[in-house]
Image (cartoon, rainbow, N blue to C red):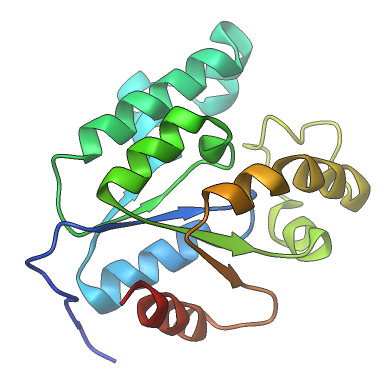
Length: 177
């Protein structure tokens, strides 16, 4: 494919939202490599800035504190151009975050089945919301609870089940225009 810098002069971002394990990091990396977009992994950025793990942030300050860090990061990203942002799984749960994202770009919901998500995250221990509940049934419950907010926030919905990163990214770029 090569590096196809999409409208490098535009200031639009692509915000990838979806449940953990839906493919946000993989797709962000592909868009970075193939389309020359700057890549921001929200969770990694927050971990780096805080100097501690997400699990530690949740344990010491709670989820609300972490969500505020996400909001502050989104606001700082407004100054950049042509960025693909892999959002944390809960980023789109806050309306103010959705408003921030829509101001600067398109929100792409990456969807995956609970079974696919389980296969992708089952060996991970950096998923505070799943610790002690690493099973398809619990993942489905969480996904069902978040689905309405994800779908309401999304400009575009793309399924990742059984598809290559190339196929998914091609669909995203066609729909983003």
